[in-house]
Each structure stands twice: as C-alpha cells, then as structure tokens.
Length: 128
Image (cartoon, rainbow, N blue to C red; front, side):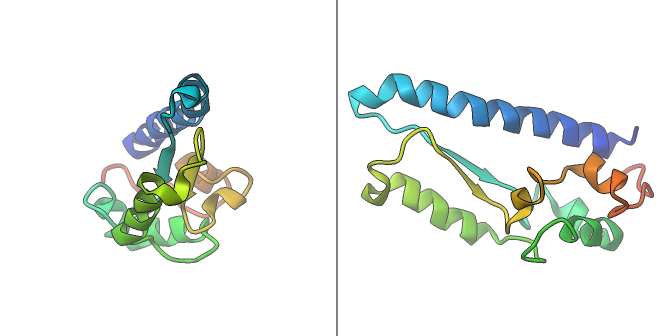
C-alpha cells in the first residue's frame, strides 16, 4: 500500500473520531453556555496539500470526487470559522461544519482508497 494511502486512512480515522467526539462533548457543556463545534475542511490549497495539488494526475483524480470541481481556498475556511466564533452561531453546538465543495455528498465523501477503487485516481504514486 502506498504511503499516501496509508496516511489518508489515518486522516480519515481522526476525522471520524472528531465527528463522533464533537456532539458527545458538546452535549455535556451546552447547559453551561459553552458551544463546541468542529470545522472539517477537506481539499483546500494549503501547505499540507501542496504535494497533492502539485501532481496533476493526483489533483485531477481528487477533483473528480468534488462536485464543485475545484480546490478550496483557505479564506473559504476562514469564513466558516468566523461564523462558528460569532454570535451568529450562538444556538449552534455539537455541529460539524464541513467545507468541502460538496465532496461528502458523494456517499460520505471519497478518500484516496475510494478514488483508487473507483478508477478516479491511478495507483501511480509511490511517494509525493
């Protein structure tokens, strides 16, 4: 299994834990006036994703799994964070706000292994 796919599985596991953890903890703190939400950005053009974005074959495979057809921009995540930190979200707690260009609408979203299995990404890369 390529290192990139292995890393994606760890990322997916921590994401799943965050999705489960957030409402559980939020429920316990809500009566004290504490809001706890999670912000779940997916494929955005950042330092963390530059190797994926910089490889045309990988980038194109990822984009085929995103209905908006483009990589997100960091300021698009910033807007979601501002919402969660503002009074506009004062009745929002235990929520996971996903900023992903619609990727999760594809049956829960596609990870690297999903892209490989669906033929949206070739198993060409051994190291990024």
